Image (cartoon, rainbow, N blue to C red; front, top):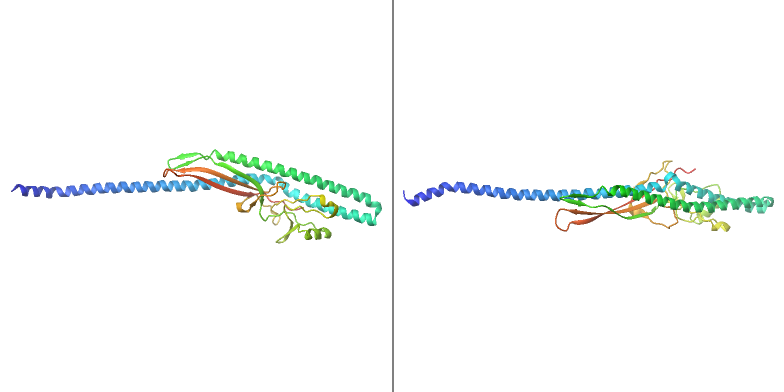
Length: 303
C-alpha cells in the first residue's frame, strides 16, 4: 500500500473525532451565552421587582405618617364640638339682640336685663373665638409631633445593600396641614329663628349639600348690626352619615388644600423621597417620591 493511501485512511479515521469535539465546544459556548442571558434577565427582574416593592413600601410609609397626624387633629371630636359651640353661640347672640330690641320697644322695665344677657352672650362668643384659635395651635402641634414620631420609627428600617439593589434612608421633604376640597363644616343650619335663617341665606353662609344644609367652612359667618364685629368661623370636617362617624382615612392628594393660618386644620399631607440604586449599569441611581394626604376623623352626630 502506498504512503498516499495510508494518509487517506488516517484522515478518514480521525475526521469523526474532530467533528465531535467541535460540536461539544459549540455547545459549551452556547450554554455559556444562555447562562449569561438568564443571569442578566434574573438581575433585571430582581432589580425591577425590588424597585416596585421599595416604591410601594415608601407610599405605605407616607400613608402611615399622614394618618398618624390626621388622627390627632380631631382627637375626641374637639373640632366637631368647637363647630357646634360656635353655631350655638352665634344663635344665642342673634336671639339676645332680638330680645333686647323687643324689650326696649315693648317692655322697657326688662331692657336692662335683656342688655346684660346680650353682653354675656357676646363675651362668650369672644372667649369662644379665642379658644378656637388656641385649639388650632394645639391640634397643629400634636399632629406635627405625631407625624415626626411615626417617620422616625420608619426611617431606620429602610437602609439595605444587595448586589442588585441599594436603598438609602427616606427623607421627610414636606409636612403640610390644611383641609380637603369640597368638605364643608359638619354643622347643620340651626332652625327656629326665621330672621337668622333668612340672613344666612342672603349672605350665603349655608352650603346646600344633598339632604343637608351645612355652614360653610372657612367663611366668617358674621351677624348683622352691632354684632357684626364678632367672628364666627366654622372648620371643615366630614359630617356623620346616619350617625356613623367617618374614621381618619387616606384621601387623594390632589384634593388637599391649604387655607388661612387661623383656620383649624382637618387634613394632612406628607411627601417622602428615597434614594435607590440598582446593580445594572453605572448611572442607575434614582430618587423615588411618595405623596399622601389623610383626612381627620369626622364629627360626631350633632346634639
